[in-house]
Amino acid sequence: MISEKMKPLVQNNSAIRAMFEEGKRLAAIYGAENVYDFSLGNPNVPAPEAVKTAIMDILNEEESNFVHGYMSNAGYEDVRETIAQSLNERFGTNFHLENVIMTVGAASGMNIILKTLLNPGEEVITFAPYFVEYGNYVRNYDGNLVVVSPNTENFQPNLTEFQEKITKKTRAVIINSPNNPTGVVYSEETLAQIGRILTEKSREIGHGIFLISDEPYRELAYDGVAVPFVTKYYDNAIVCYSYSKSLSLPGERIGYVLIPDAVEDAEEVTAAAVIANRVLGCVNAPSLFQRVIKRCVNEQVNLEAYDRNRNRLYGALTEYGFTCIRPQGAFYLFVKSPLEDEKEFCRICKEHHVLVVPGSSFACPGYVRISYCVSYQQIERSLPAFQKIAAETIG
Image 1 (cartoon, rainbow, N blue to C red):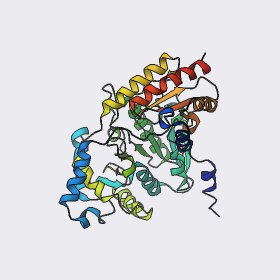
Image 2: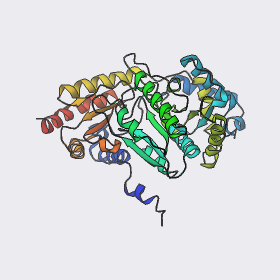
Image 3: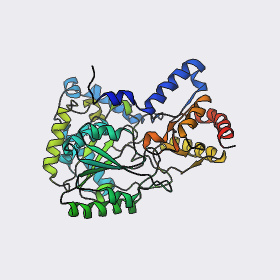
Image 4: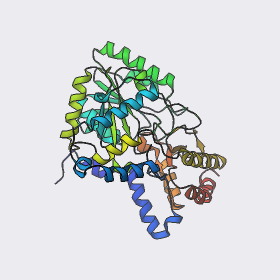
């Protein structure tokens, strides 16, 4: 018999993962080339060549017990220092190794921080549309997720409602920019306003509020758009980062948490987060890929491939009559459903072997997410199907 806490998770499994599994089923029936799976944010662009070189060099140069052994729960000191210095060079910050904890990806990092900060019954605010797992992460520690409704005009956060939803129970706020699922980058003005609101509200309610920035897509921005670095706009800001997208390493599960000195009770928060890393069962981030990150910290995937996909798919879909805000980053299109019920629209898409994710999975019904981190050839093959879907649903 499973726990009561797990029963709703089993009953309401991720729509994204369900669609991914459906794609595999359809591919087995109709052939992979005849199924157009845009469900999962699984990068198709290869990791930089420097990653492969680093892996081989490390395995050839280092003693195996050093490469594959335990280290501090926070990670290798030289790796953490390398990351801190890279951030300092890029963003004009003043971080050091003690600010960085190596983690098993950004998701693990978020769980570590939420376990560190949350007391039962406390609230974490986020902005719709948001990554579906945030609610599960918060509930893991008996917190409550409070959702600010979406601003569908430009998908910048609805700050008026945000300010109204901060209460004495508010412990933290989660933001995600570039955003999954919209591809929107939160502007400098938006982040500055969030910082001002949190500073004022912290004084008003008598305790600090933490801003947790989930940043797996930070390096994926187009058209010269700059992604502002959040610690500039609010002192109590913590960053959860992953190399899953920037280096195309989602299965390797490697990232970090950044806790700046400016964070309230930074030493205590950092010490607790290191322990949370251990007691959650992660123990430490993967040793080999920590060493890889040290050598590849400033490498990046071929962003031009994603940009080409973005331009082709966005251009074609808008030509066919679909409505979509042009994404500034990440690798998703958030398309307005021509039908009031976007799940019905997803069903029609599936009839044409096109797999997309309903916006209700991101607390934003009436839209669908299309992940364009696929091959350019798949996009080209899918366009006749999208034309038929448009004819059937738009007219």
